[in-house]
Amino acid sequence: MTEYAAERISDLIPEIEPLLQDHFREISVYQDTELDVDWDRYARLERTGGYSFLTCRRDGRLLGWAGFFVYTHIRYRNYLVANEDMYYLRPEHRRGRTGIDLLKNAERQLQQRGVRRILMSTKVHEDHSRILEYLGYEHHQKNFNKILDTVNEI
Image 1 (cartoon, one colour):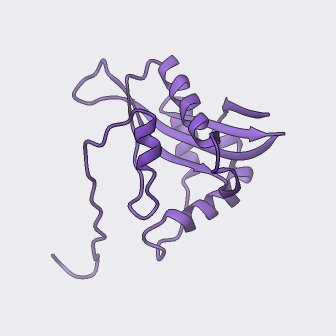
Image 2: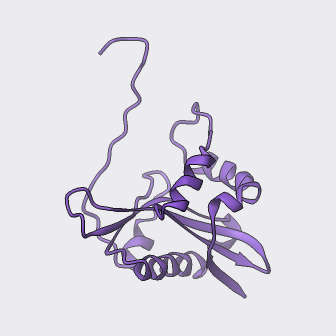
Image 3: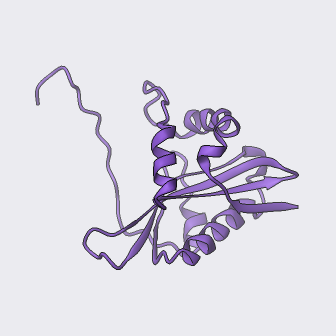
């Protein structure tokens, strides 16, 4: 049976790190950047309620997660927002409903915390738009990324 639970990312570092490396290789656009996670910052955010992490397990084995930064919106102080940090599911568990159930459980957990809006993203080369739209998310914004050359002046 698959279980979904709120856990502390800072308690799971040894369990998460190998999967995070796989996840990074799969989705990272810029492979020349080394993954260097600031685990202390995650722990600080968790202590202040600024980070929410939901795991997906089967027989105790970590299958995946959904992590969110949780904050009040700077222009709407009474509006609690969850901004997706990362979501991952082991490739062998991506068929069926496990991923959908993971995100639905994350939504329930966030809603119980008072979150009113969830912001999700997907990579262009690993597009999960169909799943997000199935779950009721609307495409309303495009984000762009640019790496700045620190040697040459602009």
